Amino acid sequence: MLKRVTIVVLCFLLTACSAFGFLFERLPWLTRWQFDRMFELTQQQEELVESGAYAMQQWLVDTGFPLLIRHLDEANDLWQHEQYGLAARQLELDITTSLQLFFSAASPYLSAFLLTLNEDNAHHFRAYNEDQQNEWFAYAESENAKQAHRLEKLEDWFGKLDRQQQLLLTKHITLQANELQVRLANNHHWKERLLDAALNKDELQLLNWLNDFSIWWTDDYRQLRANNRLQWHSLLEALLPTLSIKQKQRAAERVGDWIDDLKGVL
Image 1 (cartoon, rainbow, N blue to C red):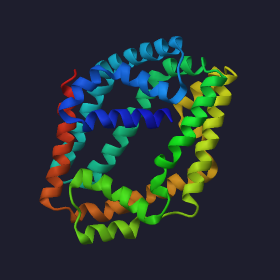
Image 2 (image 1 turned 180 degrees about the horizontal axis):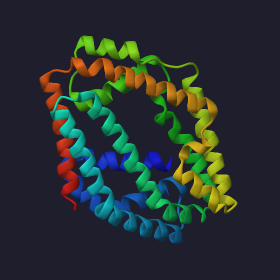
Image 3 (image 1 turned 90 degrees about the vertical axis):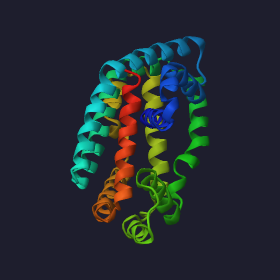
């Protein structure tokens, strides 16, 4: 949940183009607003969340964004030298590493907040989670929905895929058995583990989770995730050699835009 929120907020900021700097300046307010939607915060909790968000905003400026810029530059250099597969793998690894560093830095602030949760917060979060999960996992309702979701992500990067490229996607991306049910069950599992640890003031459990979200995955979800990663990597291996010059340029330009946006707030 916290990882999803962070990814959504950062991706929203990065895809907002010229508005990135304006929105980044308001990151503490955006964070407080989102947490209030999720937990219905008390005034004391609002102050705690906003204080932690200010600290993490500064961490992003001092450490997180400069490191991410360096990684993006390296991946873009590989892409420009036609090492497309290596560039894609490097970008995926670098984003994962950046998120891990972010949560490691944020864990004291997040755990301090989670330890303030009460039964009212828990009730509100359960209702929020229940209300949102259909939207979160809509892509897993059918094979067509899953393929359409992947197509949208790919076309964000490369522009319109031609018919043969779309056929590659349908060949490599398939819905796994009970995929939606597995995701819903995993969502319920980690949510209840999180609330149990928070309400029982188990700081060690919370810190362990913040440093490794997978500790509260179900076994079925762990296998599902591994299988989906294999599908995705298989698709990229088949798709990247088919990209047109225009598609390759679009991907390079998108990374370049990210770099410029990040540099603009330093």
